[in-house]
Length: 228
Image (cartoon, rainbow, N blue to C red):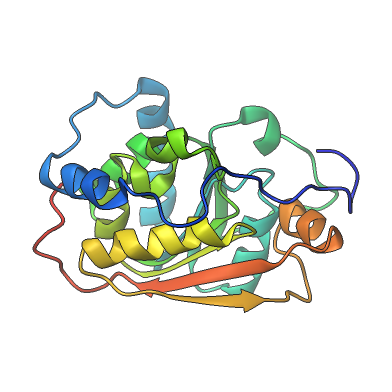
């Protein structure tokens, strides 16, 4: 990541919600994803499952946690919960910190495309789920690479809990909100001005003068449209 305060705003050839969003989300809802689960993610999950069951507390997920700074904040904020932060990059997760991690937190290297399905298999009690500043994939041709345009979206919905996503690209959250609506969930979007940055990305974007947005949704009700 380059210096603080020099981040460019998201540039896209989209000016609004993608015209193929509804068709894409409906297709993924109607067709459960059957791709084999990667062995390295399964191995990491087994360790996480032992950790979760040992603490026997409600689970907080921190998806795409990067260096784990956001997971550390969540572990401190919710000491009576089990915080599982995960990222696909071992180098980001391996960055050293000058203090010991919280005893209620575990960071693992995993692919969320597989991890969500494994969590559903073991029926974790997910009370909260955070995703801070996911890769926006801003080109219109990249819709299917966005979380809400990918086959993992129905699994994310089924995890339940209070879901929160932050982004510096409003269209991304508007698309996610519409995808949730298609899956029969509701969500709200607000502009935020965090006093304490939750992650290095949030710090960088705020210092660069970007507008920051937050989507919040309760995924605790069962939806007859979402199929795993």
